[in-house]
Amino acid sequence: MTKRPIIIDTDPGIDDAVALAIALYSEELEVKLITTIAGNVGLDKVTTNALRLLQFFGKDIPVALGATKPLIKAPIDASDIHGSTGMDGFEFEEPTKDLVLKEHAVNAMRRVLMESPEPITLVPIGPLTNIALLLSMYPEVKEKIAKIVLMGGSTGRGNMGVMSEFNIVADPDAAKIVFQSKLPVVMVPLDVGLKALVYPEDSEQLKGMNDTGRMIYQLFQKYRGGSMKTGLKMYDATAIAYLLKPEMFQVVDTFVDIELQGAMTAGCTVVDLKGYLKQPNNAKVCVDIDADVFKKWFLESLQKCN
Ligand code: RIB
Ligand code: CA
Image 1 (cartoon, rainbow, N blue to C red):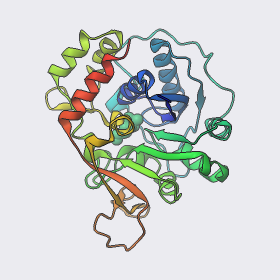
Image 2: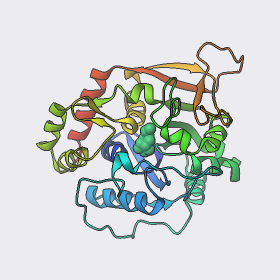
Image 3: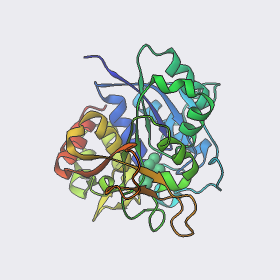
């Protein structure tokens, strides 16, 4: 089976760590490049976390550093959710920097895309700054992008504002550029992330599974994306789940735009499910997930790790 080439743009992030583990050990995906973006915590910390994970997994994937801040608005972070390091809970060995490219993430993405014999799927699981810069600086890459499968947004309530989700509200101007790009965009929003839950009995299975399971179990002790009792939210893993098992999702074709001006709603994704705005569809949006299928897939996927 030929592997599907992907580039992951990430801000590890405990849920990013889970998504990266599943993607890196999948027999169906070829991770061509990992680019880092300031998000959950600052760029240096998320990059160190990405390198820590690659060293832990023993995977030699090139890493390129991206933007240190959003296009226009002031940076926000989610250290309250992931800890001050961005990945509290497990003592990783200090990683080497051998995998770090000298190129900026945007230039590295352009090179990898233009060199590829086939289109590549972009998988942003953090703020969309790098992706917006790529599309703005190098529009020629669009023909080499198969699709953009992004974790972000919400058809309803938010997790970083009344109506706004962290990845989008962290850089709403970048998100607007991505949704207006006319590229095939798949939005994997909070609506499904809130149902992709890991409960204590699931975490206990991780402890006895393998080294990766044990590491993730430790990270979960510090992860505040939900609670052990009510379930930990595997937001970013849902984007990987869409790549590997899309049938677990209910998906609709619709129009999505980003509110930039609202005094109370700036940064929210306006998902026009009923066509009030009379705009052409520009995204597939995952509006529901089979939580049982996700849980089974989640545990089976982590079983494949070392
Ligand atoms: O809202 C959830 C998203 O914000 C996830 O990508 C999480 O890692 C944080 O970046
Ligand atoms: Ca993330």
